[in-house]
Length: 292
Ligand code: ATP
Image (tube, rainbow, N blue to C red; front, side, top):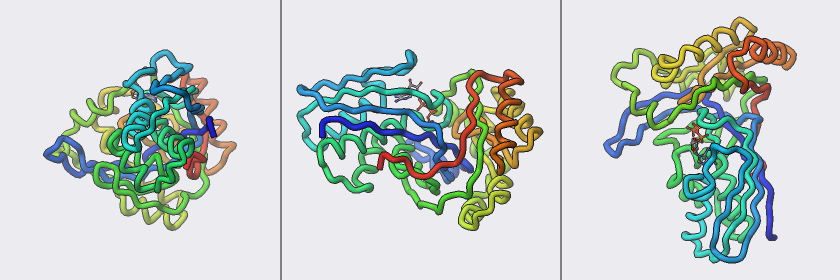
């Protein structure tokens, strides 16, 4: 096999708590991740020589070592002594710098692609060991679906698929740096922590109202404080009938959860009409990506 095409799915956080800052600067987290139906498309082709070439349809995405796909390919090549290079074509659909793990999910797809193209026969654990060196969200992206993530994000407990739900996702026109958000988080000043254990129980019980009622993200104390549009979109989604609404990851993306597709469609149109942002999506909870 010389080439392969994969979809790399985005995620949202149904819950995100930060427990403490470790001495090495990483944060210990407890979060529930959920794959959603927004995806990038990547085409990988082996090439002679050692060069890694990336082409993409979005000008703001780096095509050199700055791209997490480049890092992932290089790391797999070095670890498994692969002489060949790679040509990658990246169709970017996931909002960028949005809290939806766009770069991490592309990196996960690159690891899956290298494994398949070079017949490495890597286990999920072996892939995750490489992935965590690229970013804390990559091990989850390699797994996909619904999962509890602890440690720095790499200690994973797969959960049963969340019940069917439709989503309106809106990314305000500001780019947020995950690193800066964590640097500005005051863990000792947090007065509320999301009920992550309750969220896990609701998922296990297939209880969508329980999930929507337990949405919580401590990073809103940094990003939503800085960008009032986040709270405005959340309130608007609730007005439009969302069971719950939350900022995903370090933001600024906001999502609202709906039980009925038609209600979600109406809310999607209302959000578009209200003009908060040009980046609005109508999607749903999704299962594992086809990349694994
Ligand atoms: P997370 O939810 O994991 O914090 P994010 O959605 O906040 O991720 P990304 O979209 O992954 O952030 O990208 C943040 C920055 O990383 C971008 O501004 C871009 O310069 C760089 N980057 C590197 N590789 C990629 C990639 N494959 N896709 C998107 N951005 C990338």
